[in-house]
Amino acid sequence: MDQNVLCGWLPRCKWRFDVAWTAASALPGTSETADRGVSLFRLYLLRANYLIWAVAGLFMALPALIAPDPIARGMIESMFGGLWVMGIFGLRYPLQMLPIFLFEFVWKTVWLLAFGLPQWLAGMRSPRLSEDLLAIGNGPILFGLIIPWDYVWRHYIKKPAERWRCCSARASSTGLCISDAPAPSRKEQTFLKVRNGLPIQLVVATHASKRSAGVS
Image (cartoon, rainbow, N blue to C red):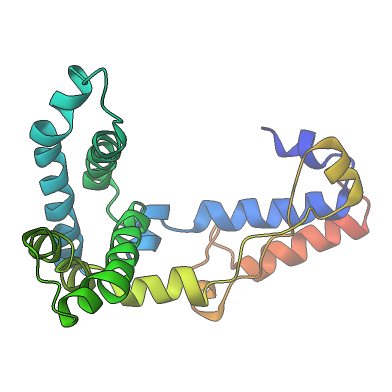
């Protein structure tokens, strides 16, 4: 949507939108920025596991979805079908689909600590428990080695949370939620260049002078 339509009635918001728009045009691609800090080997390691999901789903999930049992509950089959689809998306976007691996790591770790190991240590070594330990118990180790934890730390713990409210009451009443443009970090300022070659600080000053002069 045109930024003039969104912020035409909010001079302050429009000015900050212009600055953010100019800065975004000078930044590298979103995927390139997100990939920074994650090695190519790690990306291919993630893709290899997504590929296993995608191929396994052809034999484990797809047949049950094509010809479902009319009296089956279907929860496990549907979950496998969802993981199969997510695996296909993960081949193209391994980092954006990383929460799927985090979910697998968390629930398998919870099962291992709350159910698997206590039952095994208590002597309940049934064939079913042995199968579950083999199928689920190795999940924390496998996903713990695959997941790029430095990326998780930067993007899910250290990174500021997304906005909780709109920048103005009027924007909230109209259903248009526009947040103030965040200031670039010191590292980002080293490569933030606009199309005409001027630093971003000069662009901010230009917009500020236009704003003070009454130019929209």
